[in-house]
Image (cartoon, rainbow, N blue to C red):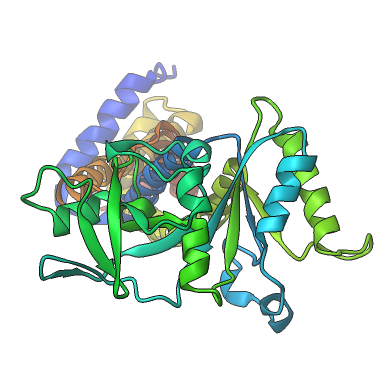
Length: 417
C-alpha cells in the first residue's frame, strides 16, 4: 500500500525544516541569489525614480513644446562628425518664419547661448562665477511656464530697446543677495556693464539631482545679448504647439526649417527637433544599457547561486539516502521524492529572493536618506521579477538532484551507511 502524497504545505514545511537544520550552509548557498536579485531590484528602483523625475521635469516645462537645435542631442552627442560641426546655426529669421507660417504653432522663443562672454556677476564686492548666461526673447516665459518669486520677466520693450536688464535664478539670488529681501532694482556688474535686476525666478518643483538649469540662470534680453556679443551664434528655438496639435506642429516646423536652411528633398535634416516624448525616449535608451549591465551582473550571481543550490542538494541527497530508502519502502512514489527535493530547492532560492528584495529596498531608502536629490522608486515589476526568477533558479537547478534522489534503489538506500 502506498502512502498518501504530501500536500504542498507539508512539503514546504519539510524543506524549511531541512534549511533550519543547516542554517549556515543554506545562507552561503543562497548568497549568489541574494546578490543577483538585489542588484536588479536596486538598479531598477534608482532608474525608475530617475525616469519619473525626468518625466516630471519635462512636463513642467511643457508637454506641447518642440525644441530646435542645429546640432544633434542625446546619446550620440560625443560622436558628431566634422560635417555636423560645420552646420550653420539657427537664426532669428527661422523662428519668425515658423511663427508666421506654422498654423499649429502658438509661440516661438529664442535662446542665445553667450559662451564667449564672461558670465561672472559682481555685486557689493561679491562674485558669482557659476551663472549660465543666455539672451532670451520675451516669449520664453510663456513657452516654458516660467514662474517668478520677485519682479517681472523680460518684455518685448526690453528686447526691442536692448535694455541692460536681467532676470536671475534662485541660486544666484541666494548667493549674492542672501540677506537682502528685496532684490528687484539692484544693480549688478556683468562684464563691466551695469545691469538692473528686474526679476528672480521661482525654483522649479522638479529637478535633476537637486539642480535645474534655471537655478543659475542669468537671463538678459535676446537683442541685448546680440549687442554684447555679435559673434555668439549658437541659437536654439523653444517652440510651443497649440493644444492637441503637437505632431502637426512638429511636421510644420520640420518643413519650414528644411526650406529655410535650403535642405534638398533627398538630404537629411541639418538640424534636430526634440519633444518631451523624444527626450524621455533618449533617457530610456541610455538607461537600457545600464539595465543590461545590471542584468548581466545579476545573471552571474544567479548562476553562481544556482550552481551552489545544485551542489548543496546533491550533498543533501547523499546525506539523506537512508531517509529516501525508508520513504520508498513504505510506499513513497518517485513523484513524491522529486516534489520534495524540488520544493526544498525552490524554497531555498525563494528565501534568497526575498532577502535580496529586502536588501535592495533597504539600499534604496539609504540612498534616498543620504542623497535626497537622487530619487528611488521601488517598481512592483522588479520585485515580482526578482521573486519569480529566484524561484525559477531553484526549480531549474533542483531538477537533477531531485531526479537523482527519485531514481535511487530503495534496497541500496536502506543498506547505505
